[in-house]
Length: 368
Length: 150
Image (cartoon, rainbow over all chains, first blue to last red; front, side, top):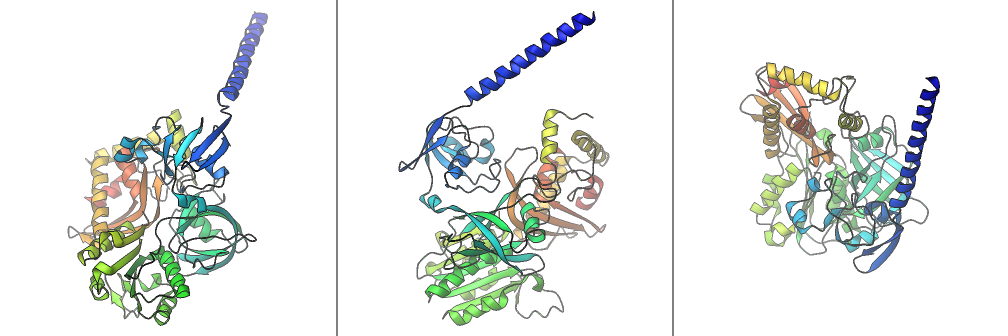
């Protein structure tokens, strides 16, 4: 009896081991896609080892598509056009594609598409300017109780080429309960002329993985990785008047734009409305007012929505929209640059259009 | 109750540091289906459904959005304020895309009850009847929520 049991167990173990070996061999053979070619815009060809996602295959070759979720298929920032070789659209992509994109069938999430054969894609040319930077934290400024300005200096000789208003992606490191790094996007708040370092303005978000890391763990001398620059929110080179509207950390790209204009010179009429709740939420106020002496026609207008008794506030109160009328002299020749929450962007856009500013001259970077 | 493989995957995504800093379960040791079932019983006893509750929450969040994210009084007794922060979050059930990051605070001045929720709370309640585990930063007790909302 005992011999039979031993024999059966041995036979079963042998079969199990054999099956495991077959599966390992099969997996190695079946998932070995060999070298695959990625044709980009019909102008550039990369040879990569097949089997990885399009997003990571591109980043291995120093081509960085935007990705706020680190390739987890949740942010949809890595959408790109796959002309051929991408296979069918996956169920993980469908919820993140619009009806038009689904109908077109060639817009895909690069993080979900596996490169298993030669593939042809189209990406904006600006993507080639995006690079990864290693940087050291050289300055941390507490702007308010929940907002910090962090300066990152790039490793030797590294320089970033960006337009005022664009953003970078900051990669966090594991800390505390957070076992995996995350990637988050932040507008650059320093001017493009300083290209060996950059500053980000980061507001603490309750339960935020990245902002908690920045506010509670990041310290001077720490090294981080950044990729960028990204985004199509940047200052247009025209002679039009400008209305800037920002709230909270939305001040970052506007600060970059103003500092850039101060370097190159600007005679455009500009008005900057900064919406905050209370005096505690105001920051860089003196620095922004200082631009009134730099430019021939610039006004900084902070507006408090929740001014409190005894806070000493004598400036404008309520929402920013009622004050637009006085700042606009020729609506058809006025551009607007907005950065803040979707609610603010919607309300401000509506008000600016009512004032006669063409919709296509209203540029925005929405937190949403 | 023993968790299915699918629930184990969801539980993994609810752990601290995956989607949010402290996760969705707090110190709750119950299975996800037990958490949902217990809260559902509480809600049924109050003659409310998760969809009714979620739609009411959305009604108030939208009301404060329409007021430029400011503090508004809705229907005379609800003081509502929503604060939007940068970024988006995905659902631990890994469906339905991702959700804006905002926190709505509502005070029912008639019974002096205050509740605070996120955009993801609304989705989790509407689609998954999930009010988060006890001790979680954004756990919503169904009874308190109903008291504040209706």
